[in-house]
Length: 133
Image 1 (cartoon, one colour):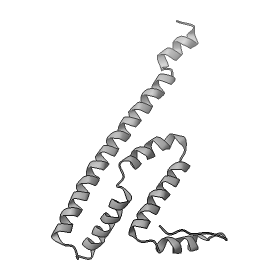
Image 2 (cartoon, one colour; image 1 turned 180 degrees about the vertical axis):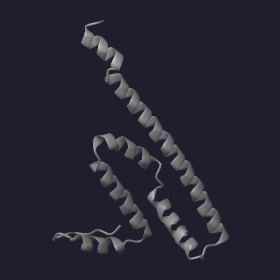
Image 3 (cartoon, one colour; image 1 turned 90 degrees about the horizontal axis):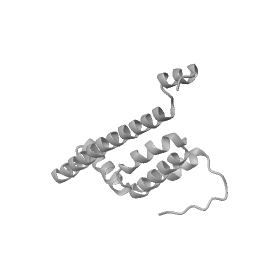
């Protein structure tokens, strides 16, 4: 992986120029690192959801290969073996998406249950306000 020693500050254009020079594997690694940076900046309430989504993400090497296969497919320069590989990635991504959705729904249910345990119901509030046990 290339190393850059900075003596000066980079503009966003400078940074984009440097990122554009990365090869596919380096770019996939950069994207994964950038995703982690974004994850660290999310409010605490969103971190759990982001971690769930991140857990089902393709590793950087697979992301780079998928990007390459999609580009070949767009250019109609893809072999039958590569089509089968692309189809396998699509199945893997579909399963990951389903699992992510299931996990996020479970998180939402858990949060709703926790919220309802800490928020008094209307009935219990009226008993409290009226002085009834």
